[in-house]
Length: 88
Image (tube, rainbow, N blue to C red):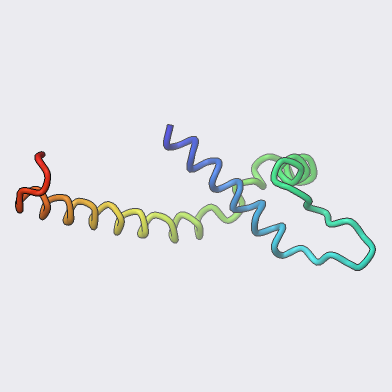
């Protein structure tokens, strides 16, 4: 479940970055037009591994944020349970 979610998010992040960085000349079509088209084009032109380019910097950004979210959830839920707002 969650591993497939992360794979999809990382691929979509690559596509988003490419779409944002492309320069569209007046009167011409953009190279990357949408998510599905872009995924197919990247895989065709550069190979499927190109869909995971830059995974290390992305993970270095995502993992600490997820850890902070988890720790905050645990601290808040623990406090609410101790104060009797929720039953564990």
